[in-house]
Length: 176
Image (cartoon, rainbow, N blue to C red; front, side):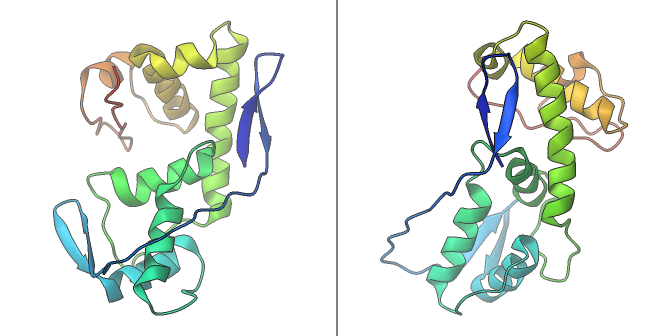
């Protein structure tokens, strides 16, 4: 679900409806991911598995809608975890035969992010401080990594483009 900042210095989850309006006048024939081009049919098959939803139609507009659903993650840790796994990691690929976590599993990982963020907020940091400071984001990533059973130091997060120790990778934010 989406989150909002509460008076008590914690992020509270709540579900809200979100719509993506897509107007397109072109062809969606292929999609590049990690240097590889995938054709529409492969993308459609992959989206069904990755999003746990059947394609409503075989037209390219339905695939565009699926990709937008995958890319739009703002305010939802579970969707952000899914996006990172399916699109951002160097190992991400469009594989219709692949095995993907369920939304329930993404929500379980998201809960770890929510707890770590709330711990930082209760420790006196603001959401703005955490989101705008690379070191604070690195601390959040390290706390999540630790909670998930990985050993990654703050220094590794701050100084590397991509962390590949143990099983974790972080995604750098270009704004700092």
